[in-house]
Image (cartoon, rainbow, N blue to C red; front, top):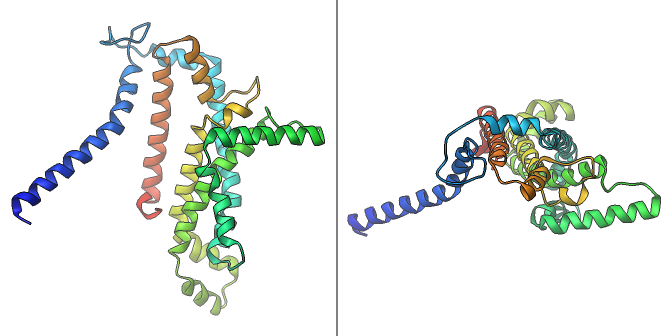
Length: 271
């Protein structure tokens, strides 16, 4: 290949990569920019800039309560996913049992099943539970936590499993042969190696739970609305920069979480 052709390919590849990055990033930049418009109704160009939309978003109880509900639910779902996902990952990586691939597929299925389908299926299942036992689950905090735990669990298993595969079992066997107890081997050898996967799994489990709309829309109660549903309800009757302010806060929160996580556990090592 000639030098000129190679240079043209590099330039074309760079231009294509920049176009893809721009396609992803520019909408986010526009949302942040829009959140500072002073226009009463969204329009372009902006008449001026203000921070009033952020104050208005916090003053609205639907957004404020929805934020705290989403935050609480996502944190609990992440803890549940960690408690279930860590032993499940060990079983999938270290275990040798019949149907292991099937179990892995079932545990990963919430990632591939459309959210609307999963949410409606859970709603019907909860109704059946209520019909058979009289125990109301749909529309309660418990039902919402169960649904969000199912959202978080595959991310936890996927990233922890990836980290576990990189652990050399012979190192653990050497520690056990020298008299180390199983818990000592786990906390002193295995856990430090898989820590990036645990942190990254917890991060992505939290984020995907926090931003979920499809499953939540079937399972929230009249007095418990997540932030994403509050956004949809607000857009039904309003079209101003309050939406941009709420979205900007979410973008900032997720960005900070990514930066903090990458500071203590390089995400590139977890994938």
